[in-house]
Figure 1: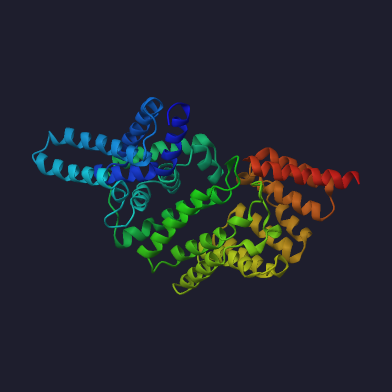
Figure 2: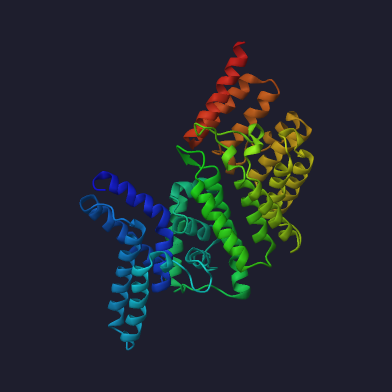
Length: 424
């Protein structure tokens, strides 16, 4: 394939394989920033050469090999300054030969089992701030744009860009090695790693921008990373809690959009389309989380998801238990977003007026000022109370705030429904 389509192919392959390539280079170079730079150079070479030469049969392997050659050239250049040039060169040439012979195997990891997880633990080094760790990992490992990360954190895009720049600089200045920590140090970084996987899954589960409601690849990647981490750290209850949450949430994927790709709300979904295997896996992971102590934030969210999974019909949902679980979650990790979700549960358990009272308390929360789900939830509650004009205004405000096309269409349809109700 030659011509303009080749650029789209290169960008798509980079989106899927960029993090693995960066991880493979970082394992060779022991320098995350340099690894990203050389991997980006390989992408630029693809964008320059593929339009004329055509897309190779295995574009991911092509990018990997070109990137590794650049890394090897860098190592050879450095080796000229060292006494052990031959040994170093032989080691890297062996890795390059393996990569050319079996590109997929070249992406495997030695001691942690996956380059992406190694990259995560490095990017979650304690020398970085909590915000910097998450932003850098989502950028380098998940390949999210600064805009997507900003929406995940409900902060300005410029703030995220600054965090990423500072994080890279801090890693370089601290000469952080590309190595997986052991024992207590690994556990210390675990919270940041779990946060990154969680945010990655959320971006795939409800895309913050774009034309599609779902980005299944991001969900699958997050779930894959979570499962690997659970095997590596089987004694950590919150790892199992996060895996349980992702398994159960993923079980609904087929029912969350209709044939045209439009969103289907939870209470309207055809539950016969929920994946029972994923539900069973999730419930089993939740049991494993329970055996390792009291529930943490992820296990609590998994327990909430389990309430939905166990309900054969929407009417069977135990909203009283869900409201209680959200109350426990709010006590453990207070946040306006958790409170907003608790308000929804309270409205289902005790009526829309009770939920609206909680939502109205959140109207001035700075973190929710541009969060489209606040007016969306408020509009839903107002509609249930028969306050159609107010509900329409809230749905229209929510539609103006979201950057996802499918979600905007859904919100505008709900606004129009309120208009119809007013005119009838």
